Length: 429
Ligand code: AMP
Image (cartoon, rainbow, N blue to C red; front, side, top):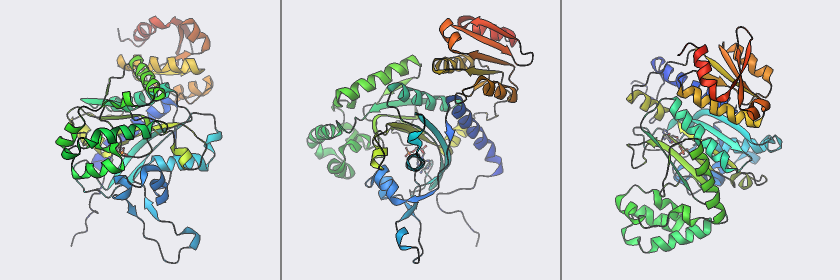
């Protein structure tokens, strides 16, 4: 008898490695540009981590956990159940607390890539072992951070060149207004019980928020006259959400507000978002999902610390890359390296990277590096032809320095003329 892979798992053959390398490359360079550092946490964790965080009654924890069999002679102080992680966020939050990262300069920005396990019914895009990419930012609830994370997520999907995607956002309120929102939903759905499915009747008692994302036609009909979440949450959350939207508009990220968007985990608060294919109306093969989780660190015994993150499934992305016949060559050489000094300059550097991308000029940056020397060293290593340097003075003057990396010659230009000048130098016009 031939040996088989375990149900819902698969081999990644040599011919597929280029897809994985392509995605790892996009993840690593997005992390570097936006100042995220890599973290890896164990695949085995205590069940309590997910029960307390992800939520004891969520599908993932109550039905899809792979428990690790323990030997009967384990030390008596280590009898707690151990499981294979179904998602990455709780492990990173645990590590944040275990290693005193709350004492580091905030925000702490980290990312991770690795396998996750869910005991699901295997089908297209749904596996028992799958890989997730994951980005987390701790220590600020500034709406600009929400917009930056959403824009980072959108940028990753765009850098992977996936087409026909949509970004949906919503707010689900904070710990102050959640109970009031749930009361109002319970009241609303009490008049719709006759058309709710069996699962939603149980959700009605446990967590009526989850009714919003039921795929059944009648349950969707039942939500039709509901007051949008963004108008039900408290004033504080409304204000936060409208600022997130303003920042998103400024960064030209094409979002749509989806009143029915909720997420499957208990820890989410305020802003939540998902990216999926436009054709996936029922949201059954979401590529990426995330949101704020301002109470999770406190739930794990830490001091109240706001945080936001997102995760995306690598196999699902590969399926789409194959379906859309996307070429997966790894970006060749770097033409321009954008170096910055200071917070204002960092923001400007991101805008310049966007300009360069739009012009089809391959560009890199390293926002986590704070000295010019280390950034120029990296530009050298990448064999960039030019470096653009923005310091505090250039930020205030509206100028930028163009440095020829081969000759070491520098020139100051107005930011408005920067693209024209660069294209000239790169012989693109
Ligand atoms: P979640 O952690 O449930 O928010 O999921 C984040 C992303 O992981 C999803 O958008 C999917 O791309 C991916 N994902 C979740 N569950 C699975 C699965 N069973 N198989 C493959 N990918 C998955």
